[in-house]
Each structure stands twice: as structure tokens, then as C-alpha cells.
Amino acid sequence: MALLVTLVRVFIVLNLVLLTGLAYVWGRNYAELRSKHSFGLLLFAAFLLGENALAAYFFLVDPTLTAWITNPSQVPPVAQGAMMLLRVLEFGGLAFLTWITWD
Image (tube, rainbow, N blue to C red):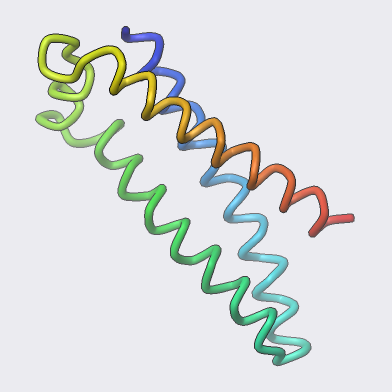
């Protein structure tokens, strides 16, 4: 089960990297164009960055939460797998957004 939590951690970091790149591009576009669309995308990236930063804190930094999340007797493997799947799906969506944004 430690593998599932490790994968969650990896995908959280990957999501943070993609979101930082997207926020940079969308922020630059907003500064240049001042369009509501660019501003909306920038806010989208900011909210997701905040969510992933909080998840990184839970899964990587806080000793109490990390110990709880990685303990299969307190968090069932099914829940750990669901957390991993959500991060992988989010990464897929962000990877596609990154691809079409940088294209």
C-alpha cells in the first residue's frame, strides 16, 4: 500500500509542475490581453495550485497526516487507490491542457 501513496505523492508533484507552467502562460496572456478568458484560466490554475499545494503538505510534510494516510489499518487500500486514481486523472487532464496551451 505504500506504493499507492508514493504514486499519489509523485502525481501531486507532477500536477504542481504542470500547473506552474500553465499559470505562467495564462498569467502572461492575461497581462498582455486583459481578457476575461485568460483571467478565468489563471484563476483556475491558482485554485488548483492551492489544492495541490495543500495535498503536498498532507502527503509530504505533516508528520501526523502522513502517518495516518500511509497506515493501511486506518485508511483502507481501496481509499488509497481512489486517492491515487484521482491524482492520475487530474494529471491526465492537466497534461492535455498543457499540450494544447503550449501548442
